[in-house]
Image 1 (tube, one colour):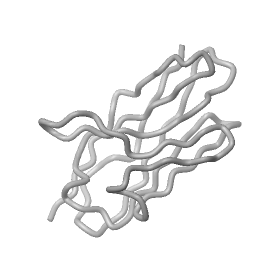
Image 2 (cartoon, one colour):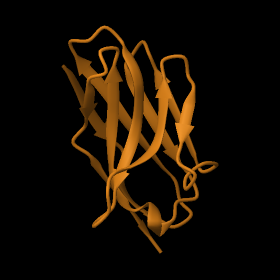
Image 3 (tube, one colour):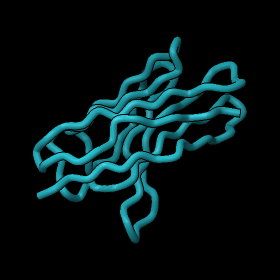
Length: 116
């Protein structure tokens, strides 16, 4: 089972930047994909970005061009650099990992609040 711990959320003004980090631990061989999802109040959880084990990325249209996702396979970490933040980016951000048995794991979430 994979345990995911996020860090780096907080309060930032519109136009600012934040970097989220997530570290995976537990009993697993390797993670197929790692990524970030977010959930705003009253809305469903949605994709932000994912990255697979060879570095291919996928991101939501709403954040493309403003975010960079990266991972360190040796350390089992994934980072999300977010720039030009907007109030609509306000949400709880969840780290996500999928192992090679397609088991999905979630972190506890970290709050990102962007003030206008």
